[in-house]
Length: 474
Image 1 (cartoon, one colour):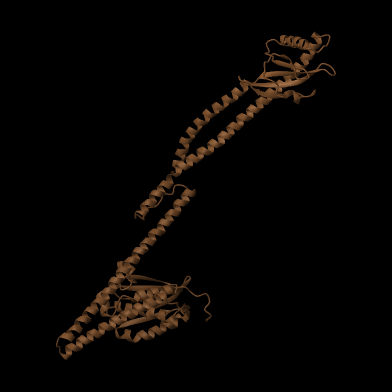
Image 2 (image 1 turned 90 degrees about the vertical axis):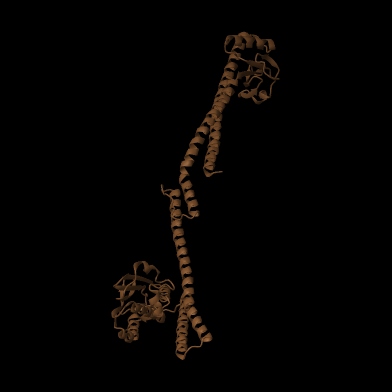
């Protein structure tokens, strides 16, 4: 059953229960009030008949002899005197023997046993034709003589009126439920419209369209649900995109790794086969062996770099306070001789600050970045190693005046085996793993690494690290 039908059905059942109980209780209360008023009127009528009988007895029967004939004569006189009132009486003696009865009612049901000289009683009797209200009291004719006077009033109309009210109420309730069902279904459909749209959006996302979002038209719980759904869809789309990027990088990694292995292995196998099967000169033998040696060293370097990448990702770094200015000066001393031979100037401007580092790994990062800058410079140029304190951290900049990197390549240069200029990188001994290792090292230090480059003017790398709260060093 649909949720809209559940809401509609539940509302109808609840309304039917409330209106039915409420209506029947109200009608019953009104009937009870009317019945009690009718009983009070019957009691008042009985009291008047009691007085009237005593008055007629005193005026009609002089000898005061209590007999059935005298009772009948008095009752007939009283009934004649109240002509047109449809008076119905039954008079009995103290033993319950009926002396007069123009009501033609059924036998006594014990009502007379419940009354005294100062009280009267009444009871409801059901007959073949309806309902009668029977009221009884004692008529005292002397100190010891008394009669029972019962007056009967037809109250069938009162019960018929109650049944008519029940019938009208049931008809009104049925019409109300029909109208309520239509309005309730329309209201439920209108209220659940955002959920139906949300369901359609869910099915479309399940079908692969991750760009679908739910419309937020209200600020109630359904609006909050739509907002949460959109937030979930945003995260899902982002994570799916990350998974696609990771899968693509993995495929590229495997393809690049296979290519990096295939090219030198093919050459090495070819030269080895030539040495094994062909008679060559000593010079040709030396050249072949030299090529096999160089390609073997390149494969060895590749395996070491892959191992470094795996180690960096899995090992726990032991960070300790390091004066970054000392590290920069040490790096300058290491690179200055080789850079001077190439006509490249290294300028180091580093603020004196203490950082929590693994010094060997961070030195590897800076040396790798400076080496990449050296490879990007054709002829003479300048390398910069800069560092300064910035808001909430310390930034290290490595900048070169080389040929730069195209904008579309910047987002991929930290991927394993990715090289902007593959032929030049391989000639210079590169395998495309350096920046991937640098990126992982910086990440393990809790920092970030970003790139900016202008083709023809150079590239700048920015490493941002958080400052330690208290290093314990001056």
